[in-house]
Image 1 (cartoon, rainbow, N blue to C red):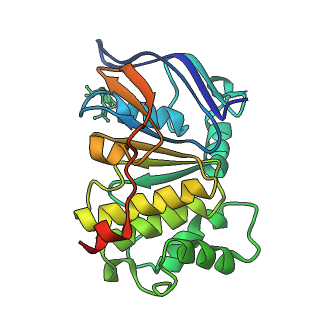
Image 2: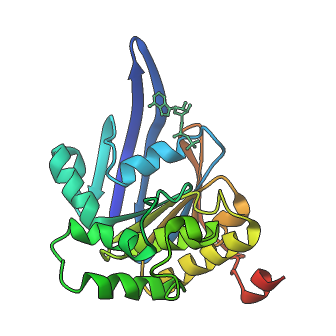
Length: 238
Ligand code: ADP
């Protein structure tokens, strides 16, 4: 069973009388352990697709099975429960809480989960995984953009989600910090995490193992990355 299966997925937005058709019948499957980029120019429908895959929105029509479960049949509260348990989000704008420490930000998803035991220990563990073991008690306004995104990745990981959805995670970063983020995502995938990356940049997309290319709400290509880029330490030090 695929982790994610979509078939003939369509999405349209209605604003008054005006209907905007954004996704025109997408079909693909994503297996556990994949690292996949959804790539396309601005306005192609990437964010719309990501919102649907991340259970933040529902398709207008078509099939979406998450771990075999038909998500179109779920109520909003069932969807929210599933989302909190199964999906870790990383956004371009970091979306961290201000006036709050790094550790508190990462602990936050655990407060809503059933796994409340050893919250500090688990949060510290994922922060160490992204190289921030020395920043636990810093406030989020005291760390760099690259470090903020690493906190966001740790927060996405802390609940052990089935998939990490990263929407333009390097979009607000200088190139060196961006490379570090891609290296962390590659390491997490090597450790078995499933990652879906949304980007408009070929360079960034090619760090994944597979690319789905979208233009005007249609898949125009879906292929394994032959010359995969690896974010190396040398590149970071350049
Ligand atoms: P991308 O992430 O690739 O830039 P989006 O998914 O944000 O693309 O947008 C795709 C298209 O859908 C755009 O033309 C955009 O204007 C339209 N769109 C997105 N969200 C809405 C909405 N809530 N209402 C109406 N149109 C929308």
